[in-house]
Image (cartoon, rainbow, N blue to C red):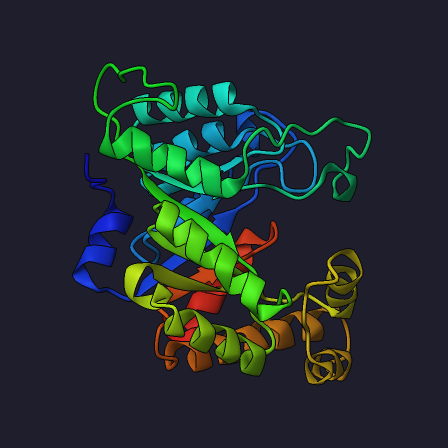
Length: 301
């Protein structure tokens, strides 16, 4: 079946797409901030609900349902780190039965990079195989073992990409495999180095990726120098130019650095919008959802 989500329709119409991110908290339903959803009403096409990215939080499925109930279309995130193919397919069926229509397929950060380094990982299948599973379930109406799905199943699948991973040839090869597996959209890691992002985009375009899927460039509004340095320390694949660090340091106190971070992010968005092959923006808030509406206004989105 063909996915009929709002996000899917915007892609079919060729609209410029804006998505954002919601990071659940380690708590119960009261941790969901409904005002976040209200602030983004009609300003974004969908909002990702993170799946235990850095440690244990409320489930992506629960957050997706709460977002949907508040009037915002969710992108349900599913990582293969924590589930085998049985649990993954079961969760997908459950999500579809609850009205979820978009899923972002990820392998997930290794558990040693989370708050639970002692936990065992699963990785029964990787993100590419998960995308292929979603495609099979949607197109053929059957599970991986051939079991027929009782009822309708139609899910718009997406994937992530890191423009800065080297070597470029292997980076693009993995990207191509995700698209061939059926990824309808690609959300990138945070873009700070525009020149290197442009090089990645050109390489992706040369392989026909930008014609087959929607590239949504990730943008992260930095709060301060400490956050930038923490990102660089935790993720060696992050690229933040020295000029951005200098601008944050020169902005003064915490409030000044936060404002400068928003200004930098808005500038990056305006540059990215003019790049051929980009279909939209994905705002990575890192749990700072209250900054998203302000960034959208500052960047003209």
